[in-house]
Length: 131
Image 1 (cartoon, helix red, strand yellow):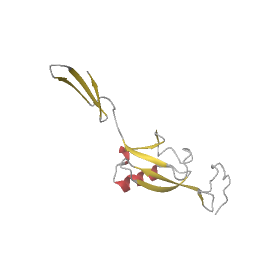
Image 2: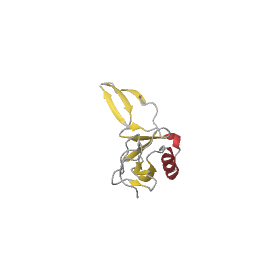
Image 3: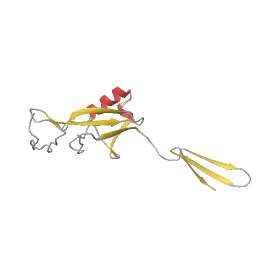
Image 4: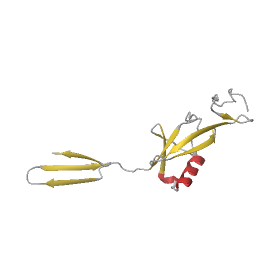
């Protein structure tokens, strides 16, 4: 195994990183879905994350185009970002969430019970009532 020093322009490998004989650093991380299940992956720190994301979607029987991958609540562009660019460390977890479009009011209705008027807004499974 290679030493844990600076390898070219690569970040310094930690003791937990796996470094191959040719100096390639691999990062192990998990991808957690909305159901709480987590899949683990080991990738080269300098390769784009899209391959791991596509493998995750295949294992979970999801369409890649419908999933948003997040690290610390920020979206990851798998075809443009590497673990090194994201400062991803061994043991980190990326969240996989279904795309949500909109975010506006889902339903509005007026209720008239002859005593008071209620305006109910249903948004993201929460209700807000204005009396």
